[in-house]
Image (cartoon, rainbow, N blue to C red):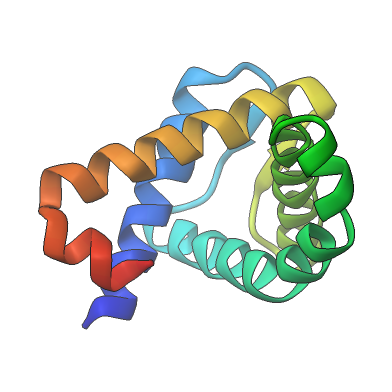
Amino acid sequence: MLFLLRLLITAVALWVATQVVPGIHYSGSPVALLGVALVFGVVNAFIGTLVKLFTLPLTILTLGLFALVVNAFLLWLTAQLSQSLGFHFQVAGFGPAFWGALVIGVTRALLYLVLGESTARNAS
């Protein structure tokens, strides 16, 4: 149940990014957006963990700001993998990926806040 809630929150955050950030487009069905959210979760869980580990010194050196660049790269990678899987999720470049990752992060945080502290604690 928690997995589905997290997947739904991520899908909503991705949808918000497509509505707010120019350069991020999605032209599929709402159900297929759950597939994009799943790809996003897998990319963050496996590739994101490795990239964040290897870039940790640079992230510390920049007081955490480089984490925004890493998140932008992970969103761009999600778009590339989603395209190859037949989902119609596109990110036009680094700028939209950067702002999209920021919007997704803020949206997810707000949704966890609205859904309650216990949901946020269990989801992290």
